[in-house]
Structure formats: structure tokens, C-alpha cells
Amino acid sequence: MWLKVIIVILFIAVLISLSSALVFLLKDMGSRSKRTLYTLGIRISLAALLLACIFYGLYTGQLNSSAPWDHGPAASQQPEPDS
Image (cartoon, rainbow, N blue to C red; front, side):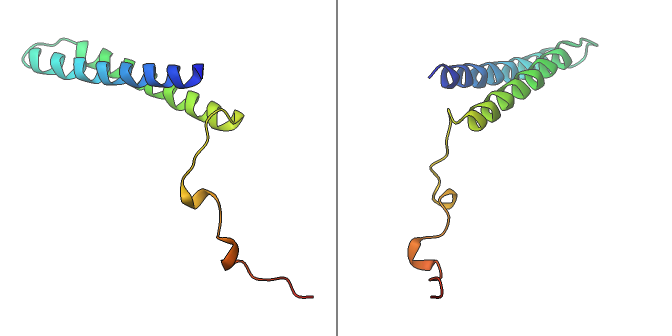
């Protein structure tokens, strides 16, 4: 349960970092400020941490996928064994 909360918080933090980078980009158009660069670096770090949490959750089984293509072919499509 806590892993899902951490993933949502990290996702929101990535969105906040991306939007603040856009604001800094628009405000600092003529100046030589590095605020945009720093916030994009923070976003990349947060995104890497987010991916690490997702992979950890999939690896440990805390997160799972319920996509139809994850279950394999249907039972009616499997060939019958020869006797």
C-alpha cells in the first residue's frame, strides 16, 4: 500500500518540477539563469526514482498488471497434447 502512495507522490513531484521548469524558462528568457537547468535535473532524478519504485514493486509482486495480453493465450487456442 505504501509503495503506491510513494509512486503517486513521486509522480506529482515530477509534474510540479516540470511545470516550475516551464515557468522559469518563460521568466528567464533573456538572462543567463540556470534555474531551468536545475529544475530539469531534479525532474530527471525524480523520474529515475519513480521508475526504480515501479520496477521494485513489479519485482517484489506488490504491483501487478491486469492487462489481457499478460495472461497468455486462451485455453481454447492451446494445442491439445498427442496421446
